[in-house]
Length: 214
Image (cartoon, rainbow, N blue to C red; front, side, top):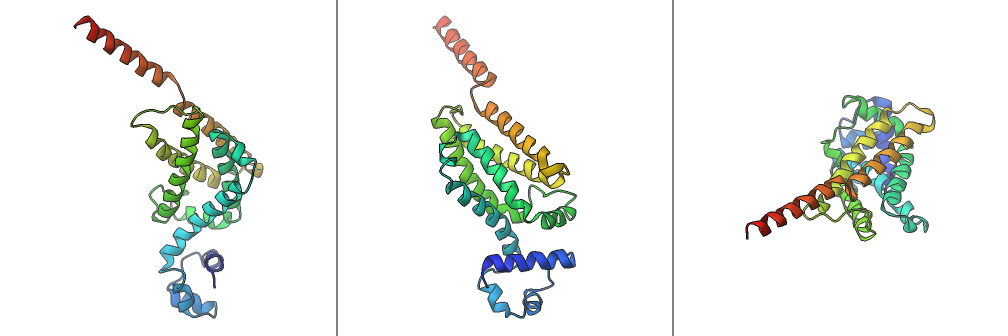
């Protein structure tokens, strides 16, 4: 039994029973399979929980990278395309995510342990998006700060995830609007803006002060 099949059976069990299986043995017995089949793929249910998020992310990224048009996008367009497709992929598991969010105060907690592997995978992806933005001068290359932009994009990802979970609009139109607006805001913050003008002015005044007292 492969990982995706186990994931599907696990999700089905949780939706039908409203909780995790009591043990791997009982879960696999219900499937008329040996627990060995489970342990060949996952060490425990926590590993399966982590796989869910990585599976959706990997599926999204592979579809994007297989699209020749995606590679012509600028950094902001790439990130928007990721969020639009990612939320579409999550739609297949919406009932499961609503179940999870009911157990975590109507949202997916930022520090939820099952998000760990997904977070690492996303940060790696976000780094490539930021790098392409810097190269195209869509993102300002700020010393000591640029490397931290990916963490800001992770916060944005969690916001959009919880926004989508709570979205009751037709065809999730509000989520689509939130994606467009947040990506626009984030890239304005990462691009050349007032922060850079103030910093440049500060450098100018510092140099003038040095000259005056030399």
